[in-house]
Image (tube, rainbow, N blue to C red):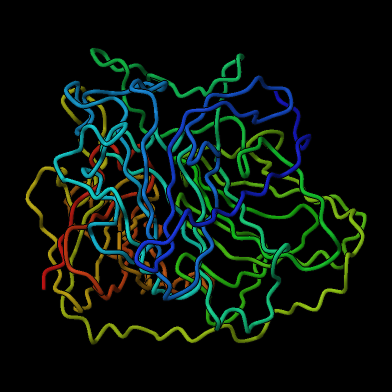
Length: 510
């Protein structure tokens, strides 16, 4: 049992361009194995980091100012986490260490999207079946928002991100700057992840689920839940604040753990943004539910909390929503705020009543509706695998929207888990959720609604790129497809699910 709140919260470094390429900022980022001390009482831990940093350095870029990034794999040839070679894409004939970087939420051409089969090895010696560029271009044409970048290599994404390959990517614009929100140094990313450790400080990722799989070792897990919580790469850190407003860009970067966050003294979160940018108006919430890969842009006002110690708590079940509540002494705690620093200067920031205009997409203008099942079936070893519309990765592409078309995707979740569904390249809006009769489906395979359609929560009524599809509910999203044609993917962002078949390609046709 590690002591909580003994280490200060790290703030990730901002990365600077290496040079300029055709008048565009050019960055070089190397994936490196190194050692980091993740808790005061732990020996240094082997991690993989972008530029040797865990989490990776933060990109802060301006809207409509593109950048180029050369991603370099300088990792060892052997993985230090257990690889299941029965997983598609991770077979014994594949190199153990493969990487490809995906800018999650980025509106990018398919050649810079980080397609899972566009992996490459150390020194770009071997490349996957989809040849990848060495230099990725990010146009940054979208509105101000908090994105993140992470590894997306086929069949081992869960291991590569767990090893440390994740970082923040923040797009800024003039509209947001005019809102007088808290700025630097009071604008702080919080990357929340769970991890487990061996006594020697090394990362523990089990090679078998709780019930071992005969004939398969190592075996992919149904999901992973660590017994400690890290924020910005430190176990249960503390952060000393002034009595003023702070802006926190919160990202759930865990493999499978959901978080329902709240503050111990009852302070609310004033949510101003979600995955793809600002909400139309601020939404005050007492708790904040985040699935893996979801982001929440929030203001916490410590003005009246001088001298207080405030714990950020978590009470989300694992697995979500049917699992057990976390232990308040361990995974039920996230981090601690200590409102002990004197006011450095008067807080002149504000939270405006109106943030931005979010045009509401009208269902009547859709070009197509797709009904897509989120289901399960056993594999040849008796393990349950999660699927999208009962299809495997290798099955023919079935979703081929036309460029600039608008589609409604009806996600029918017949499993017992909430799946955070993410689509690459596009942003979307949530239309509604509707419960259906679980028993009727189990017995007759009929989807019969048992209640009215419910609008999304107020803090979900902006642009999204990841949606929580709850068990035995119909979740409808409306998606404009553009601005690029080409090959992309959609998947569950529980990493153990996406690595083992809960991911499908889709193709935007001209």
